[in-house]
Image (cartoon, rainbow, N blue to C red; front, top):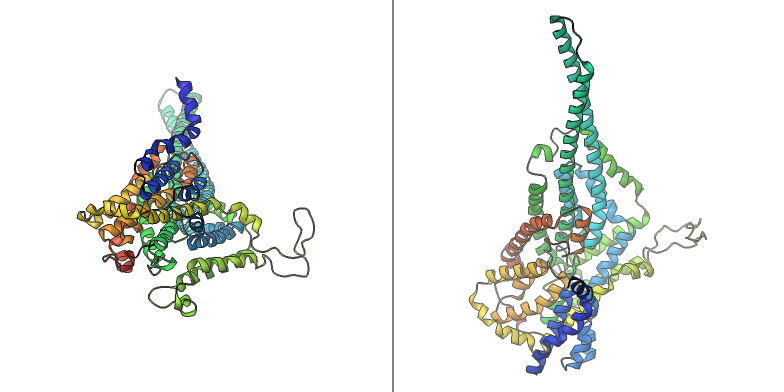
Length: 588
Protein backbone atom coordinates (compact mmCIF):
# COMPACT_ATOMS: atom_id res chain seq x y z
CA UNK A 1 0.00 0.00 0.00
CA UNK A 2 2.77 2.41 0.97
CA UNK A 3 4.56 1.72 -2.31
CA UNK A 4 1.44 2.55 -4.33
CA UNK A 5 0.89 5.78 -2.38
CA UNK A 6 4.51 6.74 -2.98
CA UNK A 7 4.10 6.02 -6.72
CA UNK A 8 0.92 8.10 -6.88
CA UNK A 9 2.61 11.00 -5.08
CA UNK A 10 5.56 11.05 -7.45
CA UNK A 11 3.28 10.84 -10.50
CA UNK A 12 0.60 13.19 -9.15
CA UNK A 13 1.10 15.85 -11.84
CA UNK A 14 0.35 13.35 -14.63
CA UNK A 15 -2.87 12.47 -12.79
CA UNK A 16 -3.97 16.02 -11.88
CA UNK A 17 -3.55 17.49 -15.38
CA UNK A 18 -6.23 15.32 -17.09
CA UNK A 19 -8.35 14.68 -13.99
CA UNK A 20 -9.08 18.31 -13.04
CA UNK A 21 -10.70 19.38 -16.36
CA UNK A 22 -12.74 16.18 -16.42
CA UNK A 23 -13.97 16.82 -12.88
CA UNK A 24 -15.20 20.36 -13.64
CA UNK A 25 -16.42 19.63 -17.20
CA UNK A 26 -20.08 19.34 -16.09
CA UNK A 27 -20.10 23.09 -15.35
CA UNK A 28 -20.10 24.28 -19.02
CA UNK A 29 -22.11 21.21 -20.13
CA UNK A 30 -24.95 21.72 -17.66
CA UNK A 31 -24.93 25.53 -18.03
CA UNK A 32 -24.09 26.19 -21.71
CA UNK A 33 -23.58 29.95 -21.25
CA UNK A 34 -20.49 32.16 -21.74
CA UNK A 35 -20.31 32.85 -17.99
CA UNK A 36 -20.07 29.13 -17.18
CA UNK A 37 -17.47 28.53 -19.91
CA UNK A 38 -15.32 31.35 -18.57
CA UNK A 39 -15.82 30.03 -15.03
CA UNK A 40 -14.56 26.64 -16.22
CA UNK A 41 -11.37 28.25 -17.56
CA UNK A 42 -10.79 30.26 -14.36
CA UNK A 43 -11.36 27.28 -12.03
CA UNK A 44 -9.07 25.11 -14.17
CA UNK A 45 -6.29 27.72 -14.07
CA UNK A 46 -6.76 28.30 -10.34
CA UNK A 47 -6.39 24.58 -9.56
CA UNK A 48 -3.39 24.22 -11.89
CA UNK A 49 -1.77 27.25 -10.24
CA UNK A 50 -2.44 25.97 -6.71
CA UNK A 51 -1.16 22.46 -7.40
CA UNK A 52 1.64 23.64 -9.74
CA UNK A 53 1.14 20.52 -11.81
CA UNK A 54 2.36 22.59 -14.76
CA UNK A 55 4.76 25.57 -14.68
CA UNK A 56 2.86 28.72 -13.64
CA UNK A 57 3.76 30.50 -16.88
CA UNK A 58 2.46 27.61 -19.01
CA UNK A 59 -0.83 27.65 -17.10
CA UNK A 60 -1.03 31.40 -17.74
CA UNK A 61 -1.11 30.66 -21.50
CA UNK A 62 -4.34 28.62 -21.25
CA UNK A 63 -6.61 31.62 -22.12
CA UNK A 64 -4.92 31.77 -25.55
CA UNK A 65 -6.31 28.26 -26.18
CA UNK A 66 -9.51 28.12 -24.14
CA UNK A 67 -11.10 31.53 -24.75
CA UNK A 68 -11.16 31.32 -28.59
CA UNK A 69 -12.29 27.66 -28.54
CA UNK A 70 -15.10 28.46 -26.10
CA UNK A 71 -16.26 31.50 -28.03
CA UNK A 72 -15.39 33.94 -25.25
CA UNK A 73 -12.81 36.11 -27.06
CA UNK A 74 -11.09 36.17 -30.42
CA UNK A 75 -7.52 34.86 -30.45
CA UNK A 76 -6.09 38.22 -31.52
CA UNK A 77 -7.84 40.05 -28.67
CA UNK A 78 -6.62 37.51 -26.12
CA UNK A 79 -3.02 37.78 -27.32
CA UNK A 80 -3.03 41.58 -26.99
CA UNK A 81 -3.58 41.18 -23.25
CA UNK A 82 -0.16 39.56 -22.79
CA UNK A 83 1.93 42.66 -23.50
CA UNK A 84 0.40 45.76 -22.01
CA UNK A 85 1.74 48.92 -20.41
CA UNK A 86 2.14 47.22 -17.03
CA UNK A 87 4.40 44.60 -18.62
CA UNK A 88 6.55 47.38 -20.07
CA UNK A 89 6.81 48.98 -16.62
CA UNK A 90 7.78 45.59 -15.18
CA UNK A 91 10.46 45.03 -17.84
CA UNK A 92 11.93 48.50 -17.38
CA UNK A 93 12.09 48.09 -13.61
CA UNK A 94 13.75 44.69 -13.97
CA UNK A 95 16.36 46.04 -16.38
CA UNK A 96 17.37 48.58 -13.73
CA UNK A 97 17.51 45.80 -11.10
CA UNK A 98 19.66 43.62 -13.37
CA UNK A 99 22.11 46.51 -13.93
CA UNK A 100 22.32 47.19 -10.19
CA UNK A 101 23.05 43.51 -9.50
CA UNK A 102 25.50 43.19 -12.41
CA UNK A 103 27.76 45.92 -11.03
CA UNK A 104 27.20 44.94 -7.34
CA UNK A 105 25.90 48.37 -6.48
CA UNK A 106 23.38 46.81 -4.09
CA UNK A 107 26.16 45.10 -2.11
CA UNK A 108 28.07 48.37 -1.76
CA UNK A 109 24.95 50.14 -0.49
CA UNK A 110 24.16 47.31 1.95
CA UNK A 111 27.65 47.13 3.47
CA UNK A 112 27.96 50.89 3.70
CA UNK A 113 24.72 51.17 5.68
CA UNK A 114 25.67 48.26 7.98
CA UNK A 115 29.03 49.87 8.71
CA UNK A 116 27.19 53.00 9.79
CA UNK A 117 24.69 51.08 11.95
CA UNK A 118 27.21 48.94 13.85
CA UNK A 119 27.32 45.30 14.96
CA UNK A 120 25.47 45.23 18.29
CA UNK A 121 22.55 42.77 18.18
CA UNK A 122 19.49 45.02 18.05
CA UNK A 123 21.19 47.66 15.92
CA UNK A 124 22.41 44.92 13.61
CA UNK A 125 18.86 43.59 13.22
CA UNK A 126 17.56 47.09 12.50
CA UNK A 127 20.35 47.60 9.98
CA UNK A 128 19.65 44.37 8.10
CA UNK A 129 15.90 45.08 8.04
CA UNK A 130 16.32 48.64 6.75
CA UNK A 131 18.81 47.62 4.07
CA UNK A 132 16.81 44.56 2.95
CA UNK A 133 13.56 46.51 2.72
CA UNK A 134 15.21 49.37 0.80
CA UNK A 135 16.90 47.06 -1.71
CA UNK A 136 13.74 45.00 -2.27
CA UNK A 137 11.92 48.19 -3.26
CA UNK A 138 14.04 48.19 -6.42
CA UNK A 139 15.40 44.66 -6.98
CA UNK A 140 13.72 41.30 -6.48
CA UNK A 141 12.95 40.07 -2.96
CA UNK A 142 14.74 36.81 -3.72
CA UNK A 143 17.95 38.52 -4.89
CA UNK A 144 17.91 40.76 -1.81
CA UNK A 145 17.54 37.80 0.56
CA UNK A 146 20.17 35.73 -1.24
CA UNK A 147 22.68 38.59 -0.99
CA UNK A 148 22.00 39.72 2.59
CA UNK A 149 21.95 36.33 4.35
CA UNK A 150 25.63 35.43 3.65
CA UNK A 151 26.66 38.87 4.95
CA UNK A 152 24.58 38.33 8.11
CA UNK A 153 26.08 34.85 8.55
CA UNK A 154 29.67 36.12 8.26
CA UNK A 155 29.06 38.89 10.81
CA UNK A 156 27.36 36.54 13.30
CA UNK A 157 30.12 33.93 12.98
CA UNK A 158 32.72 36.57 13.74
CA UNK A 159 30.70 37.89 16.70
CA UNK A 160 30.39 34.35 18.07
CA UNK A 161 34.10 33.57 17.61
CA UNK A 162 35.10 36.84 19.27
CA UNK A 163 32.76 36.34 22.22
CA UNK A 164 33.94 32.73 22.63
CA UNK A 165 37.60 33.83 22.77
CA UNK A 166 36.75 36.57 25.24
CA UNK A 167 34.90 34.14 27.53
CA UNK A 168 37.79 31.64 27.40
CA UNK A 169 40.15 34.44 28.35
CA UNK A 170 37.88 35.53 31.22
CA UNK A 171 37.62 31.93 32.45
CA UNK A 172 41.38 31.46 32.34
CA UNK A 173 42.02 34.69 34.24
CA UNK A 174 39.38 33.71 36.80
CA UNK A 175 40.98 30.29 37.20
CA UNK A 176 44.44 31.77 37.78
CA UNK A 177 43.09 34.11 40.46
CA UNK A 178 41.27 31.26 42.20
CA UNK A 179 44.37 29.07 41.96
CA UNK A 180 46.53 31.69 43.71
CA UNK A 181 43.92 32.20 46.40
CA UNK A 182 43.64 28.45 47.06
CA UNK A 183 47.39 27.99 47.32
CA UNK A 184 47.60 30.87 49.77
CA UNK A 185 44.78 29.39 51.84
CA UNK A 186 46.38 25.94 51.88
CA UNK A 187 49.74 27.36 52.91
CA UNK A 188 48.12 29.33 55.76
CA UNK A 189 46.41 26.18 57.02
CA UNK A 190 49.68 24.27 56.88
CA UNK A 191 51.34 26.80 59.15
CA UNK A 192 48.71 26.02 61.77
CA UNK A 193 48.92 22.22 61.53
CA UNK A 194 51.56 19.55 61.90
CA UNK A 195 53.30 20.35 58.57
CA UNK A 196 51.67 17.59 56.50
CA UNK A 197 51.90 18.40 52.75
CA UNK A 198 48.58 19.01 50.90
CA UNK A 199 47.61 16.97 47.83
CA UNK A 200 48.26 19.78 45.29
CA UNK A 201 47.96 17.45 42.28
CA UNK A 202 44.46 16.36 43.27
CA UNK A 203 43.44 19.98 43.76
CA UNK A 204 44.75 20.91 40.32
CA UNK A 205 42.84 18.03 38.72
CA UNK A 206 39.68 19.12 40.52
CA UNK A 207 40.15 22.69 39.30
CA UNK A 208 40.66 21.51 35.71
CA UNK A 209 37.47 19.45 35.86
CA UNK A 210 35.55 22.45 37.20
CA UNK A 211 37.01 24.72 34.50
CA UNK A 212 36.14 22.21 31.76
CA UNK A 213 32.60 21.97 33.13
CA UNK A 214 32.23 25.74 33.20
CA UNK A 215 33.69 26.02 29.70
CA UNK A 216 31.23 23.41 28.38
CA UNK A 217 28.27 25.16 30.02
CA UNK A 218 29.36 28.52 28.61
CA UNK A 219 29.84 26.98 25.16
CA UNK A 220 26.31 25.54 25.23
CA UNK A 221 24.85 28.87 26.35
CA UNK A 222 26.80 30.67 23.63
CA UNK A 223 25.66 28.18 20.97
CA UNK A 224 22.03 28.58 22.07
CA UNK A 225 22.34 32.38 22.06
CA UNK A 226 23.76 32.53 18.53
CA UNK A 227 21.34 29.91 17.26
CA UNK A 228 18.50 32.21 18.34
CA UNK A 229 20.31 35.21 16.86
CA UNK A 230 20.89 33.41 13.54
CA UNK A 231 17.21 32.47 13.36
CA UNK A 232 16.18 36.05 14.15
CA UNK A 233 18.53 37.55 11.55
CA UNK A 234 17.44 35.08 8.87
CA UNK A 235 13.77 35.85 9.46
CA UNK A 236 14.31 39.60 9.68
CA UNK A 237 16.01 39.58 6.26
CA UNK A 238 13.38 37.53 4.41
CA UNK A 239 10.43 39.28 6.08
CA UNK A 240 11.78 42.78 5.48
CA UNK A 241 12.47 41.87 1.83
CA UNK A 242 8.81 40.92 1.40
CA UNK A 243 7.64 44.02 3.28
CA UNK A 244 9.95 46.33 1.33
CA UNK A 245 8.63 45.04 -1.98
CA UNK A 246 5.20 46.47 -1.16
CA UNK A 247 6.50 50.07 -1.02
CA UNK A 248 7.00 50.68 -4.76
CA UNK A 249 4.89 49.88 -7.78
CA UNK A 250 7.68 47.78 -9.32
CA UNK A 251 8.77 46.24 -6.00
CA UNK A 252 6.73 43.05 -6.38
CA UNK A 253 4.48 41.57 -9.05
CA UNK A 254 1.07 41.90 -7.27
CA UNK A 255 1.45 45.70 -7.26
CA UNK A 256 1.77 45.74 -11.04
CA UNK A 257 -1.13 43.31 -11.38
CA UNK A 258 -3.33 45.77 -9.47
CA UNK A 259 -2.31 48.63 -11.75
CA UNK A 260 -2.91 46.50 -14.85
CA UNK A 261 -6.29 45.26 -13.64
CA UNK A 262 -7.40 48.78 -12.70
CA UNK A 263 -6.44 50.12 -16.13
CA UNK A 264 -8.05 47.14 -17.86
CA UNK A 265 -11.31 46.92 -15.88
CA UNK A 266 -11.74 50.67 -15.30
CA UNK A 267 -10.14 52.33 -18.35
CA UNK A 268 -11.41 55.81 -17.37
CA UNK A 269 -9.88 55.84 -13.87
CA UNK A 270 -7.55 58.74 -14.77
CA UNK A 271 -4.36 56.90 -13.83
CA UNK A 272 -5.32 56.72 -10.17
CA UNK A 273 -2.52 54.20 -9.58
CA UNK A 274 0.91 55.38 -10.68
CA UNK A 275 4.39 55.21 -9.19
CA UNK A 276 4.03 58.38 -7.11
CA UNK A 277 0.53 57.67 -5.75
CA UNK A 278 1.42 54.08 -4.88
CA UNK A 279 4.58 55.14 -3.07
CA UNK A 280 2.75 57.86 -1.12
CA UNK A 281 0.29 55.26 0.19
CA UNK A 282 2.49 52.18 0.55
CA UNK A 283 5.73 53.62 1.94
CA UNK A 284 4.23 54.77 5.31
CA UNK A 285 2.52 51.39 5.58
CA UNK A 286 5.87 49.67 4.94
CA UNK A 287 7.53 51.71 7.71
CA UNK A 288 4.78 50.77 10.19
CA UNK A 289 4.98 47.07 9.31
CA UNK A 290 8.78 47.15 9.48
CA UNK A 291 8.79 48.77 12.92
CA UNK A 292 6.34 46.29 14.46
CA UNK A 293 8.10 43.38 12.75
CA UNK A 294 11.37 44.47 14.36
CA UNK A 295 9.67 44.72 17.77
CA UNK A 296 8.21 41.23 17.49
CA UNK A 297 11.42 39.59 16.21
CA UNK A 298 13.40 41.45 18.88
CA UNK A 299 11.05 40.08 21.55
CA UNK A 300 11.12 36.52 20.14
CA UNK A 301 14.85 36.10 19.57
CA UNK A 302 16.68 38.77 21.57
CA UNK A 303 14.34 39.77 24.37
CA UNK A 304 14.12 43.32 25.66
CA UNK A 305 17.35 43.45 27.66
CA UNK A 306 18.45 46.82 26.28
CA UNK A 307 21.86 46.65 27.96
CA UNK A 308 22.67 43.36 26.22
CA UNK A 309 20.88 43.98 22.91
CA UNK A 310 22.07 47.52 22.27
CA UNK A 311 25.53 46.81 23.61
CA UNK A 312 25.77 48.98 26.75
CA UNK A 313 28.73 47.65 28.69
CA UNK A 314 29.86 45.22 25.96
CA UNK A 315 33.57 44.94 25.26
CA UNK A 316 34.71 47.16 22.41
CA UNK A 317 37.12 44.45 21.27
CA UNK A 318 34.25 42.20 20.15
CA UNK A 319 32.59 45.02 18.25
CA UNK A 320 35.84 45.92 16.53
CA UNK A 321 36.53 42.39 15.30
CA UNK A 322 33.03 41.93 13.88
CA UNK A 323 33.19 45.41 12.38
CA UNK A 324 36.48 44.40 10.73
CA UNK A 325 34.69 41.56 8.90
CA UNK A 326 32.18 43.92 7.28
CA UNK A 327 34.91 46.46 6.60
CA UNK A 328 36.93 43.73 4.87
CA UNK A 329 33.95 42.76 2.70
CA UNK A 330 33.45 46.41 1.79
CA UNK A 331 37.14 46.89 0.97
CA UNK A 332 37.02 43.89 -1.40
CA UNK A 333 34.69 45.92 -3.60
CA UNK A 334 37.45 48.51 -4.11
CA UNK A 335 36.81 52.09 -5.09
CA UNK A 336 33.54 52.93 -6.83
CA UNK A 337 33.96 52.27 -10.53
CA UNK A 338 32.70 54.43 -13.35
CA UNK A 339 30.10 51.76 -14.19
CA UNK A 340 28.68 51.80 -10.64
CA UNK A 341 28.46 55.59 -10.70
CA UNK A 342 26.70 55.49 -14.07
CA UNK A 343 24.18 52.87 -12.88
CA UNK A 344 23.51 54.86 -9.71
CA UNK A 345 22.97 58.05 -11.75
CA UNK A 346 20.53 56.30 -14.11
CA UNK A 347 18.70 54.73 -11.18
CA UNK A 348 18.27 58.11 -9.44
CA UNK A 349 17.16 59.68 -12.74
CA UNK A 350 14.49 57.00 -13.18
CA UNK A 351 13.12 57.46 -9.66
CA UNK A 352 13.02 61.27 -10.05
CA UNK A 353 11.21 61.00 -13.42
CA UNK A 354 8.70 58.54 -11.94
CA UNK A 355 7.91 60.80 -9.01
CA UNK A 356 7.62 63.98 -11.08
CA UNK A 357 5.73 62.53 -14.06
CA UNK A 358 2.34 63.07 -12.46
CA UNK A 359 2.74 63.90 -8.75
CA UNK A 360 -0.97 64.75 -8.32
CA UNK A 361 -0.79 68.03 -6.43
CA UNK A 362 0.74 69.86 -9.46
CA UNK A 363 1.05 69.14 -13.18
CA UNK A 364 4.04 66.88 -13.82
CA UNK A 365 6.49 67.12 -16.70
CA UNK A 366 4.56 64.48 -18.71
CA UNK A 367 1.30 66.44 -18.37
CA UNK A 368 2.94 69.69 -19.47
CA UNK A 369 4.92 68.25 -22.38
CA UNK A 370 3.04 65.23 -23.73
CA UNK A 371 -0.24 64.36 -22.02
CA UNK A 372 -2.45 67.36 -22.75
CA UNK A 373 -4.54 65.30 -25.17
CA UNK A 374 -4.56 62.07 -23.16
CA UNK A 375 -2.36 59.70 -21.14
CA UNK A 376 0.26 59.17 -23.86
CA UNK A 377 3.33 58.95 -21.59
CA UNK A 378 3.06 56.52 -18.65
CA UNK A 379 5.42 55.10 -16.02
CA UNK A 380 6.13 52.27 -18.46
CA UNK A 381 7.29 54.76 -21.10
CA UNK A 382 9.73 56.30 -18.62
CA UNK A 383 11.01 52.90 -17.45
CA UNK A 384 11.79 51.72 -20.98
CA UNK A 385 13.34 55.05 -22.02
CA UNK A 386 15.72 55.18 -19.05
CA UNK A 387 16.57 51.47 -19.13
CA UNK A 388 17.67 51.85 -22.77
CA UNK A 389 20.55 53.98 -21.49
CA UNK A 390 22.15 50.83 -20.06
CA UNK A 391 22.70 49.61 -23.64
CA UNK A 392 24.15 52.96 -24.78
CA UNK A 393 26.45 54.22 -21.99
CA UNK A 394 29.90 52.54 -21.81
CA UNK A 395 31.02 50.77 -18.62
CA UNK A 396 34.44 52.51 -18.77
CA UNK A 397 35.60 55.99 -19.68
CA UNK A 398 36.94 56.35 -23.22
CA UNK A 399 40.69 55.76 -23.45
CA UNK A 400 43.42 55.51 -26.11
CA UNK A 401 45.25 52.81 -24.16
CA UNK A 402 42.74 50.00 -24.67
CA UNK A 403 40.22 48.43 -22.33
CA UNK A 404 41.98 45.34 -21.04
CA UNK A 405 41.48 41.79 -22.32
CA UNK A 406 38.48 39.53 -22.71
CA UNK A 407 38.06 35.96 -21.43
CA UNK A 408 40.17 34.58 -24.30
CA UNK A 409 43.01 37.01 -23.61
CA UNK A 410 42.36 39.19 -26.65
CA UNK A 411 42.63 42.97 -26.48
CA UNK A 412 39.33 44.82 -26.09
CA UNK A 413 39.31 47.85 -28.39
CA UNK A 414 36.02 49.39 -27.30
CA UNK A 415 34.40 49.48 -23.86
CA UNK A 416 31.36 47.24 -23.30
CA UNK A 417 28.09 48.94 -22.41
CA UNK A 418 26.63 48.77 -18.91
CA UNK A 419 24.37 45.89 -20.00
CA UNK A 420 24.33 43.52 -22.93
CA UNK A 421 21.45 41.40 -24.12
CA UNK A 422 23.10 38.12 -23.11
CA UNK A 423 23.04 39.17 -19.43
CA UNK A 424 19.45 40.38 -19.73
CA UNK A 425 18.38 37.18 -21.46
CA UNK A 426 19.86 35.06 -18.66
CA UNK A 427 18.49 37.07 -15.73
CA UNK A 428 15.15 38.42 -16.93
CA UNK A 429 12.28 36.38 -15.39
CA UNK A 430 10.31 36.08 -18.61
CA UNK A 431 7.81 33.74 -16.97
CA UNK A 432 6.51 36.62 -14.82
CA UNK A 433 5.59 38.57 -17.96
CA UNK A 434 3.48 35.62 -19.11
CA UNK A 435 1.92 35.39 -15.63
CA UNK A 436 0.97 39.07 -15.77
CA UNK A 437 -0.49 38.60 -19.24
CA UNK A 438 -2.46 35.55 -18.15
CA UNK A 439 -4.02 37.60 -15.35
CA UNK A 440 -5.01 40.40 -17.73
CA UNK A 441 -6.46 37.84 -20.16
CA UNK A 442 -8.55 36.30 -17.36
CA UNK A 443 -9.91 39.72 -16.40
CA UNK A 444 -10.77 40.52 -20.01
CA UNK A 445 -12.45 37.14 -20.47
CA UNK A 446 -14.51 37.62 -17.31
CA UNK A 447 -15.69 41.01 -18.56
CA UNK A 448 -16.49 39.88 -22.12
CA UNK A 449 -18.32 36.71 -21.05
CA UNK A 450 -20.49 38.51 -18.51
CA UNK A 451 -19.02 36.51 -15.62
CA UNK A 452 -17.92 39.73 -13.85
CA UNK A 453 -21.45 41.11 -14.07
CA UNK A 454 -22.94 37.86 -12.76
CA UNK A 455 -20.49 37.78 -9.84
CA UNK A 456 -21.29 41.40 -9.02
CA UNK A 457 -25.02 40.71 -8.91
CA UNK A 458 -24.46 37.60 -6.77
CA UNK A 459 -22.41 39.57 -4.25
CA UNK A 460 -24.90 42.42 -3.84
CA UNK A 461 -26.14 41.10 -0.43
CA UNK A 462 -22.73 42.10 0.97
CA UNK A 463 -24.06 45.67 1.01
CA UNK A 464 -25.37 44.95 4.48
CA UNK A 465 -21.85 44.39 5.87
CA UNK A 466 -19.80 47.49 6.80
CA UNK A 467 -17.06 48.14 4.19
CA UNK A 468 -14.23 48.09 6.76
CA UNK A 469 -15.30 44.59 7.86
CA UNK A 470 -15.37 43.39 4.25
CA UNK A 471 -11.88 44.82 3.68
CA UNK A 472 -10.53 43.19 6.84
CA UNK A 473 -12.02 39.77 6.10
CA UNK A 474 -10.90 39.77 2.48
CA UNK A 475 -7.36 40.79 3.49
CA UNK A 476 -7.28 37.90 5.94
CA UNK A 477 -8.58 35.50 3.28
CA UNK A 478 -5.97 36.61 0.72
CA UNK A 479 -3.13 36.51 3.30
CA UNK A 480 -4.13 32.95 4.19
CA UNK A 481 -4.50 31.87 0.56
CA UNK A 482 -1.10 33.28 -0.42
CA UNK A 483 0.64 31.02 2.12
CA UNK A 484 -0.17 28.08 -0.14
CA UNK A 485 -0.09 29.76 -3.55
CA UNK A 486 2.18 32.27 -5.28
CA UNK A 487 1.30 35.91 -4.63
CA UNK A 488 1.08 36.46 -8.39
CA UNK A 489 -1.51 33.72 -8.86
CA UNK A 490 -3.41 34.88 -5.76
CA UNK A 491 -3.81 38.48 -6.94
CA UNK A 492 -4.54 37.38 -10.49
CA UNK A 493 -7.45 35.25 -9.29
CA UNK A 494 -8.87 37.56 -6.63
CA UNK A 495 -8.66 41.07 -8.10
CA UNK A 496 -11.23 40.70 -10.93
CA UNK A 497 -13.71 39.19 -8.44
CA UNK A 498 -13.06 42.00 -5.96
CA UNK A 499 -13.57 44.60 -8.69
CA UNK A 500 -16.95 43.08 -9.57
CA UNK A 501 -17.95 42.94 -5.91
CA UNK A 502 -16.97 46.58 -5.30
CA UNK A 503 -18.98 47.74 -8.30
CA UNK A 504 -22.01 45.74 -7.16
CA UNK A 505 -22.06 47.05 -3.58
CA UNK A 506 -21.06 50.60 -4.65
CA UNK A 507 -17.76 50.71 -2.76
CA UNK A 508 -14.64 52.33 -4.21
CA UNK A 509 -12.80 49.47 -5.99
CA UNK A 510 -9.48 50.42 -4.40
CA UNK A 511 -11.01 50.13 -0.93
CA UNK A 512 -10.95 46.33 -1.26
CA UNK A 513 -8.43 45.80 -4.08
CA UNK A 514 -5.61 47.82 -2.50
CA UNK A 515 -5.44 46.05 0.90
CA UNK A 516 -5.86 42.63 -0.72
CA UNK A 517 -3.00 43.34 -3.14
CA UNK A 518 -0.61 44.17 -0.31
CA UNK A 519 -1.97 41.28 1.79
CA UNK A 520 -0.88 38.92 -1.01
CA UNK A 521 2.72 39.79 -0.07
CA UNK A 522 2.21 38.85 3.59
CA UNK A 523 3.37 35.26 3.14
CA UNK A 524 5.31 34.93 6.41
CA UNK A 525 4.22 31.62 7.94
CA UNK A 526 5.50 28.80 5.72
CA UNK A 527 8.87 28.12 4.05
CA UNK A 528 7.16 27.27 0.75
CA UNK A 529 5.14 30.51 0.68
CA UNK A 530 7.85 32.61 -1.03
CA UNK A 531 11.42 32.04 -2.32
CA UNK A 532 12.86 34.42 0.37
CA UNK A 533 11.21 32.29 3.08
CA UNK A 534 12.67 29.12 1.57
CA UNK A 535 16.17 30.64 1.41
CA UNK A 536 15.99 31.85 5.02
CA UNK A 537 14.58 28.49 6.18
CA UNK A 538 17.53 26.54 4.81
CA UNK A 539 20.11 29.18 5.70
CA UNK A 540 19.07 29.90 9.29
CA UNK A 541 18.46 26.30 10.42
CA UNK A 542 14.88 27.20 11.22
CA UNK A 543 12.05 24.87 12.16
CA UNK A 544 8.64 25.27 10.56
CA UNK A 545 7.29 26.09 14.02
CA UNK A 546 9.73 29.02 14.32
CA UNK A 547 8.44 30.50 11.09
CA UNK A 548 4.79 29.88 11.98
CA UNK A 549 5.16 31.53 15.40
CA UNK A 550 6.91 34.58 13.99
CA UNK A 551 4.84 34.80 10.81
CA UNK A 552 1.39 34.48 12.36
CA UNK A 553 1.81 37.63 14.45
CA UNK A 554 3.33 39.51 11.51
CA UNK A 555 0.38 38.52 9.30
CA UNK A 556 -2.02 40.02 11.84
CA UNK A 557 0.16 43.14 12.19
CA UNK A 558 0.29 43.51 8.42
CA UNK A 559 -3.46 43.20 7.93
CA UNK A 560 -4.17 45.73 10.69
CA UNK A 561 -1.56 48.12 9.31
CA UNK A 562 -2.89 47.94 5.74
CA UNK A 563 -6.47 48.55 6.83
CA UNK A 564 -5.35 51.41 9.06
CA UNK A 565 -3.73 52.99 6.00
CA UNK A 566 -6.76 52.44 3.79
CA UNK A 567 -9.08 54.08 6.33
CA UNK A 568 -6.82 57.07 7.10
CA UNK A 569 -4.31 58.58 4.69
CA UNK A 570 -5.37 56.23 1.86
CA UNK A 571 -8.97 57.41 2.16
CA UNK A 572 -7.84 61.03 1.78
CA UNK A 573 -5.46 60.30 -1.10
CA UNK A 574 -7.81 58.21 -3.25
CA UNK A 575 -11.15 59.58 -1.96
CA UNK A 576 -12.16 56.07 -0.89
CA UNK A 577 -15.28 57.23 0.96
CA UNK A 578 -17.11 57.85 -2.32
CA UNK A 579 -18.01 55.59 -5.24
CA UNK A 580 -16.26 57.06 -8.32
CA UNK A 581 -18.10 57.63 -11.60
CA UNK A 582 -15.36 55.85 -13.55
CA UNK A 583 -16.14 52.61 -11.66
CA UNK A 584 -19.46 52.35 -13.56
CA UNK A 585 -17.76 52.71 -16.93
CA UNK A 586 -16.17 49.28 -17.09
CA UNK A 587 -14.48 47.83 -20.14
CA UNK A 588 -16.94 46.82 -22.77
